[in-house]
Image (cartoon, rainbow over all chains, first blue to last red; front, top):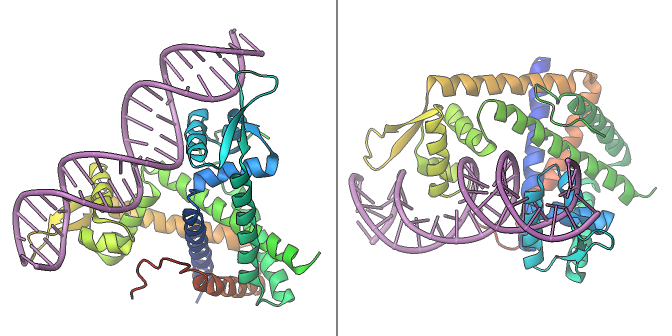
Length: 155
Length: 155
DNA sequence: TATTGTTATACTCTATAACTATA
DNA sequence: TATAGTTATAGAGTATAACAATA
């Protein structure tokens, strides 16, 4: 049982965690008629207020065309509306409907419920240790990127 | 600073971790002409040997139609071939090419490299604590599922 | 009759390029 | 001329249904 073996076990735990969390989220979202991509937009508008599609495209690291499609879907299903921009007649402000706001808040509550479920059985000291370990791994992971083609390392 | 706040910080760490690992993998795979879905098939065949598309569909929790598409792509890009089944003339055995095997092994080595990068700076005791914390969270996460519409709880 | 994999069809997400209306 | 958002087009992933060949 050498170090590399131990490392492998830890990495497998992280991978399984990522997969399970992904599945949990997708299930939760699917029940509300949302996808991962659409909820990303919903989340941004909920947290930062009405925004142009341009701004959303930059925030999610995607193209304006893609945002058009996502907002089309969110609009058709009643989560957002496109409002006129007060000073720029080219732009549109993506704005949450009452329903969109309600669902965003529900998702936030679900987030808290999940957090409680995952950590409440863990003693405070164990939680602190876990947090420290995760912080280390996150630091290492943030320095891994930028392999060959750094697209935009701005901001 | 109550418990719920602490929980939230931990969950945010886990979410960021999942996102970063996802991005890291996607980047790595993209450089080799593979996608997440295709590498799943590659991985299954590499680990379990030649398999029918039926078997692959069940293993990835998808439809036979979807596997047809994924194998089409992997075949067109030289990772796998479709071989005749020795005893069932309806079935095909998805089999790795030399190139497919080589790439699968490279991915496995990259996996180990990533594990080393993430954990080597962590003292043994910290690694143990992290592993214990992750085990707890994984246990909790595995019992969260099955909310309303359990598709197939077999095996 | 049941099973393996296909074609047919459709929807979501993503990407690039060309275009319109406005700045 | 540059910017905001669209249409046009394309490809990957996923899903259901109908169908062929074989069991």
